[in-house]
Image 1 (spheres, rainbow, N blue to C red):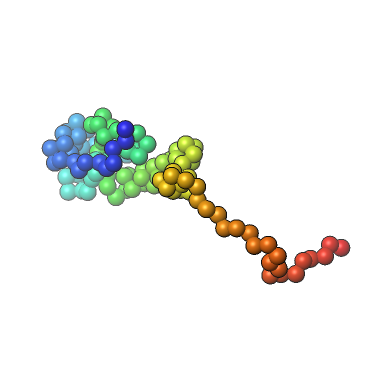
Image 2: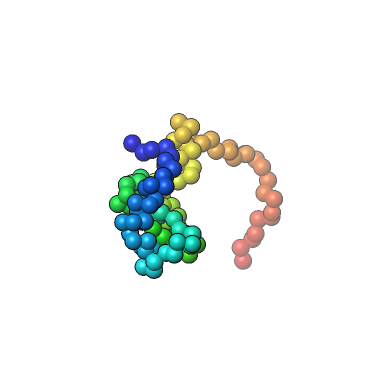
Length: 119
């Protein structure tokens, strides 16, 4: 079963992941300086795997590397949802427990533009 939200990460867990990776960004391979902003990044996006284990987490530069990977992850997640058949409309329909009503066509309504004659 999918968890509703991710728990916040403790400082001890962040330190453990930093020590395991040696403070090296797994995306670019450059050592992250202590004064730089850095994140603990999911190697496989959480929205795809729901894996929050230490094996799926790694150190990444916050500004460049993590931000760029997240842009690509958003596209991959959207594609996976489309392939699974869960579009926004389908999700709303499932949550409501029924179909989304459509607007009926009005009979006898005149066109707003004249009908073109073929030559």
